[in-house]
Image (cartoon, rainbow, N blue to C red; front, side):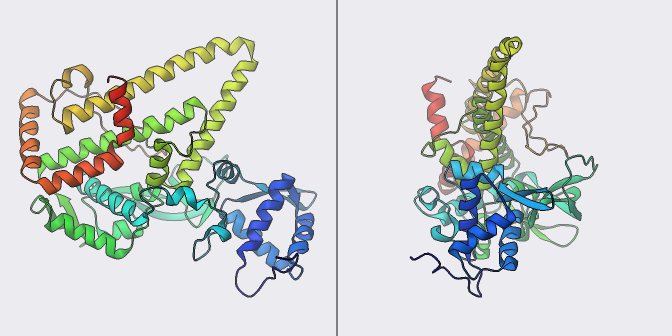
Length: 428
């Protein structure tokens, strides 16, 4: 293609976004006037208005940032964009139809996950989310208003990022609702789905199909039922106490697994191999944006450790931190194994060795990272555990299809095979 042959037409030209990204990356930072002149080399007919429109879109999608210098804007890539480029997960302004040429996204990584089938992963996550929320209920975010993000803002309201503009926060309050509705899934009114599974975008037909399957098939019938909320919404909810407890234990394991992998990366201060199973699991489960943010935190922790190396007085501090990290990660591994054997495989030999308390996942308003917080309460008494063990074993032995679905979810999401294998190899 000859220089200048890429002309701007009436449609939005994503090639301009790609060229802006390349120019800013090559120059590290760039004044607006210089950026416009560089663009004119490739797009001779481009106007300043068109250039501004593309810059605004890239800023709103957290690709570019700018600062003012003598009434002139200086543009640079955001930290998120730089990390995404480094690990091959960069995505430029999103077009209506995603393709590698227009977005710069390394689709070979994404497509290699889950047998090149996004619907396959959406099916698994749909089952996972429906069962989890049908067991624990839904945490609904009540929108109040949106405002510009300010680093010095101590706003007392609960705030989450505005999905339409990363520079804004949406403030409001949470409320708990029983069960989960199809609308909760589709519109992501459930904050757990919105914040942690932003990449989960199933079609309406997939959601409807999974709801119907869990209501009427696979041994779940009668144990998952439709009910009506006080506002008239139709929900599905797990009414079998032992199945509900089983799913809640699986959810607790899942949060510990996510926490273990995420903080393993952060504390090691290194970027995992894109081909590693844990990287693929994290990316396919939580999506590009959350994966990139975790890797940014890992790079920050690496910088912090490097700074300690430079300061003679802090070398002992680094050693102590590493010992603490090792202890925490070891305890997490032991708790994951202990919970899995005790409450999923129902092997009570693990119960006294690992489980010192019931592990509850708590979501305090200011806890954006969803950190699992152990709450010390009396251990389940032996009679209750034996009833749970007997009922769960009978339930799964008498419902082969239910057991197959749950085992598939465990292997793919709750307690992925690669981590299970690692724990076995380490003798946990």
